[in-house]
Image 1 (spheres, one colour):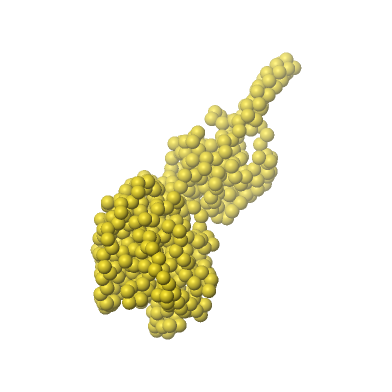
Image 2: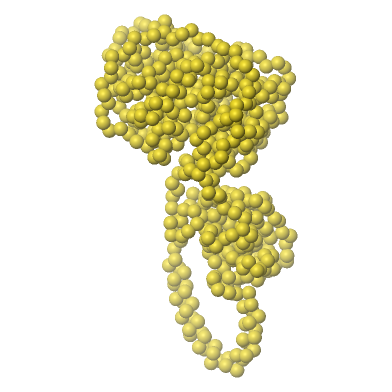
Amino acid sequence: MGETQPGGHFRPLEDGDPTVVAGYRLAARLGSGGMGTVYLTYTPGGHPIALKTIRPELSEDPEFRRRFKQEVQAAQRVQGLYTAPVLDHDTESSTQPWLATAYVPGPSLASAVTEHGPLPVPTVLLLIAGVAEALSVIHGAGIVHRDLKPSNVLLAADGPRVIDFGIARAADATALTNTGVSIGTPAFMSPEQASGRGDLSPASDIFALGQVAAYAARGSSAYGDGPSHAVLYRIVHEEPDLTGLPEELRFITRLLAKDPAGRPSPAEVIALCQEASPTPLRQSGSWLPDPIGEQITRRVSASAELLAARANAPATPATPVDAVPPPTAPVTQLSAPGIDPHAPTMHSAHVPTSPPTPPPTPPPYVQPPAYQTHPTAPYSQPHAWQPQPPQAQPYPYQRPQPLPPPKSNSGKVVAIIAGVLVLMFGGCVSLIANMDDTKDDSSDNAGTNAGSGSGGSSDSGSSEALADPKPATYKGINIPGNYYVRFADSPPRPLTSDVGGAYEDDGDFYYSTFDTLNDKHVGSSSDKIVLLNNSVKGSLKTCRAETRYAETVTLGQLSKGTQMCVHTASGHIGLVTFQSSAPSGDPSDYVSVDITVWRNAEEPTSG
């Protein structure tokens, strides 16, 4: 959610919001997310600060509280130029823990890009260098951010600010992770985080920085949009889409290396930014485009006006933080086109029903120590940067998918009954009328049925063969569960389907995992797939001759090198060679195949 409304005014408190937390009078809402709600308040001396209250669902978990206390204590050691320092906190609150950080009067990167579009190259270089310097300080305190994303990078007049470092680690430990709750933001995860590895190294944050940089420069995610499981699959298995990325920023590909050991350290990232910049990198009051600079000025003025109005307003009865009713649904944020850069870190799966315990008397406010910055030594890559062995864990973020509409078999039953009657009547007539020609017919039919066999239905009405087209071969195509490919595409690229490739008119070859009536299987929407015998070598001639059509082939029938002929309704013939399926412990479920396509190899059919 945005911090201000049109005209620079802050969003007022909503019904049910507390008015006082531990002696801090709350002035306005700054935003909300999966971890809690952030409010604007002021120190006794009138300095604005941002105070975050943690959601009750998380606060109830003892392990979360323990880890949250550790992370806040560690965060207090982070005093960098490009971080928002922790100024005050209470991790022992009887209901909702909270922490207060310095208020940054600037929009998040997510809001800035959504409102104003991609940032210019000089701004992006300063952004990357500033965030890299923040990560150097964060990592130096023994913290891995784990949730670096555009909404956690604020744009101040003198450079970016990284916020919420380490908090996601506390949420990782909560029992809620065992009830389907998502920790982290899928679109900006590293491959090792998407794979469910718990022991993340600082290199995970470097990958996220590469994604944040690509988003700032292009206005869209490097791994596309769509369901979270599809985005996670692309992060783990595919290369980023950096179309339109300026040449000066091509070094971002190094940050997006799949292997954590292949990514640069924060100090090396800063050096890459300096090499890419035609002039020395210097943060100044003009590092941002004018519209964003004007936005910051309006926020500063709005904060001052709000403080003055509060000073002149009569005191109102305070609603303590503990009296806030538990939310009935996960809080959300406004979405940008495509991947939501504002996406909350996690959603709750449990709402407490018992009333909260009355709060203790708020402690008097203690002025935090003066803000200090500490020079940091050049970042050296710690031993923990070595990639960790994968752990076999359930695939995170898997959303239940809708069951496909069942294929109606009523038409097939009627057709079978009619066919049996015709064969019974017609066969008798044919036997009587052609008794003398039995020997000749038998020899002719032997040639006709030489390619037929058991395991599928024979199709006497197959399309007439055309001249042999040239084959096109594509190797190593990974098709995730419930995706499909089209043989007309070059190369065939997996496409998503809400109901399954079997129910897409152009689902030439699909992999299905959510059919409750069948095992995992592959097939074609044309229902014309032939599993070749291992002794038969697949070719156009073989596929034209084989008419033992089946609707599907189960995964258990396939092994490395198994070949299948596929006839499509549009007249293409494909030879699909199975290579492998996803190994145990892989976060995705997919099959890997090679496909050879002969396009327009036969006359199109109606279905």
